[in-house]
Amino acid sequence: MCSKSSCKRRGQYFAAFAVSLGGFCTGCSLAWSSPALDYLMTPQNGTDPNKIQLSLAEEATIGGLLPLGALFLAIPAGKLADVCGRKIVLHLLSLLCIAGWLVIGFAGNVLTIMTGRFLSGITVGGFCVVCPMYIGEIADEKNRGFLGTWFGLILGLGIVYTSFLGTFTAWTGLHVGLGIPSVILAALLFFIPETPAFLFQNDKRDKAKEALSFLQRADADTNNSEGGEAHAAETGTFADLFRRKFYRRSLTAGAGVFFLQQFCGVNVIVFFTVSIFKASGLSVPPAVASISVNSFALFCNIVSTCIIDRKGRKFFLNVSSFSMSVGMLSLGVFFHLKHHFELTGLVKLLPILSTLLFMGGFAFGYGPVPWILISELYPVEVRGIASGLMCTINWASCFLITFLYPILMEYLGSYYTFYLYGAINVLGGVFIWMVLPETKNNRIKQ
Image 1: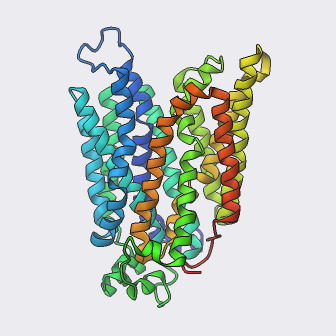
Image 2: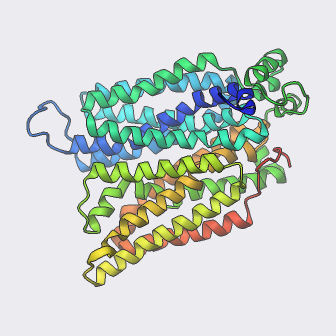
């Protein structure tokens, strides 16, 4: 039996779960490179004579196509969501995601794989903009934090799902399995409404009231909901983000958080976990390393989801900054010592503990909270444009940090590289403390 408050919000939970499957699809796309590129780069002892073989340059290109594809749609996705509606855009993205997996799964050459990977990047860019926007607009204020974490939580679940799928299936089975969540998402979208905020903003008051009723919003019978405010607001423009002081402050805070979400070094850990463990001298099977780190991160994300509304957003981000700083600096200390001394005993476990501390910290704060802030920092009239810009900063940072990591390792060495990321996380904590406003339980324009 559900509690009285939970029963009253079943519509919100169902709609949020359905749309959060876009996060699951995003997690699948992010984690794809680990099992897929390993398969393509590893000889199969003659069991698959038609298997595509990649050069190192082709591997690097395929790896970079996801953030480039995400950049391609990030800003347009927000504008499309403002013009066509959040739900229609999500339908199109789910179909495009299915197409991307089909293209890769039945690819006969490297160019086809690259095409499918770029399509996957486009869908990821769109999902990261529209899914948090939709969830933020269908949730009432006291439920927004809890539901807002679902996108990041289910994204992490998608990463773990892909790790297991890549371990126990071959090429075709992997991509069939990765396409199933997109099919489920496309089906579930038929059973949820458009957001009340979008409907009010487009003078569809009757449909907006029906949506509020379906969502069982506490403000369904009032005129002070966000949707009611949206009715009187005109859609903002890109220039509006820089003209008004309130928008500029929100833009600075949001841009900083999304910049730090990537420059904290999370993708360095995700993409190079096995390399880090190998460099440390530990003999850890790739599948074990990937599954263990991703599973622990998922666990920390679940903990964050359960308590997100007990503390402010800044609390989670500050704890996250501290944990990631200690994790990165500890990795730097280990490799510094390893460079000068022969390490034995329990000290060799430091890379595993540091990596788990870093990923746990990221999943606790920087993983889920920025997606909540999209709906809490920006009013509905500029939310689509602002969300697109935030995700553009996110994916541009992702591409840049992935590109820079091998260069930093070459010219700075491993320990100075990790020291640098540790310092960035320390400065990130200062930024969160001084610049980011607390948005928990506050109406957008407070």
